[in-house]
Image 1: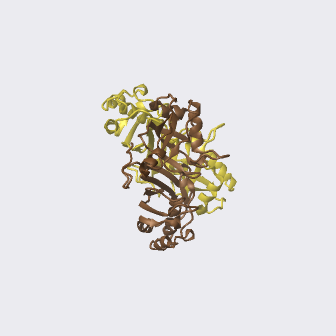
Image 2 (image 1 turned 90 degrees about the vertical axis):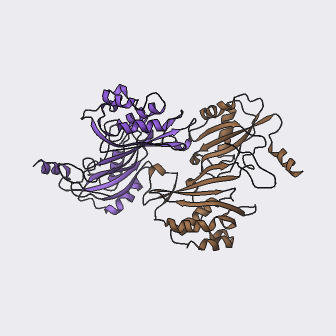
Length: 274
Length: 274
């Protein structure tokens, strides 16, 4: 019964209960989500705040996605296994943690997690937004929040290329240092031009390492006329990282949200949250 | 011929030429637009940058509106009288100034000003946006950029009240320390709710001191059920500052843009720019 074995791995260890939280952060202050020596991480910052509330014995929180240094999160779900002895009521936890967190991180919501909920493995959809400041000059209100692109961009060409990338493909050409299999379903890739700030919206179940930044870098080449829209089919087919555009800077990237809906797999439906 | 006398005041002094610029800033770093002793102003910061480019003899720039400490500007037009001897080509000025300005200020555009253009007196429309973060918890990506409102708000009630405030009225109840006449035309006042951030859009030819912040403070009372929409008519009629809501914090306020279109007045049309 592999199904049961899998479920055992997902549940919290004895003496712990699992919480579900939604967290946001400004990526400029962090070397990414993941705890690491000698660099500030969101995971460590949360852990320290919980420690100040008597939750020192908690496991490290598990996020829906692991983001790189400089990447922002508008709404990142996570689960957190806290000792059964941790007595702070969950409805007071968000506010209590926020009082101990720096301005660059906040907990948006906290509640008990449903049985077997796993922030990463139960996740059925992840949304990202990449922001471009398309303007001859920089803009102080978008400093560190959007990639500054000085040249005009052809939005129609970028969306033509984007439509060719949507679907289930081998995205090896858009990944860096990836040792998992490289076929993914890209459900949405759309360029939404604005008068100053453009949003590139991306949606899929999961993504390869640096895949979103590689996709955006490739769309930028199309927008600047350095690649034709149809060329992205050749990039995909090549499976070679050098064929795609460079990874764009992390400070334009936002983890925008995650879904925990029905998963169309043999192991049955997961919980729905939110 | 009072018309001609007025025009003389508006034109640059002999030996100077007038430039038109659009500037943006993050208000958190400044005690407002206006130069003052012992506090950093946007006007002084621009003046210092121009000085580094050889423009020490320039007059101080004149902005379409004078904003308070903490107020942001997405797009603020201004004129700037520079010595005829200042040789930097205007098409290179924005980039050159931006290289000498801190990240919190940037010049978006620079060009020669039309004859008789005055950034403040020629201005026929000013737009503001006030941003609310409507959420039980704070959000790091809106820190210092939106007023955090913890309680839910009734957007329909706020818009009902807003419609009663639009039009030409005596807005004395919404002004502080104002010695000009207090009748103004409020052309637009609209509450646009969002999932997290709400925009309140405001438009008029000109505004009294703190008027936008007083209007928003009053709409907040309506949104929280502390005033009924129709009550704002009594607030207007009272002409008493104590009847209106408190001025909301400056960090949610953005100067969003200004217009220089036709002015329907006896002194004839002004220039159109942009």
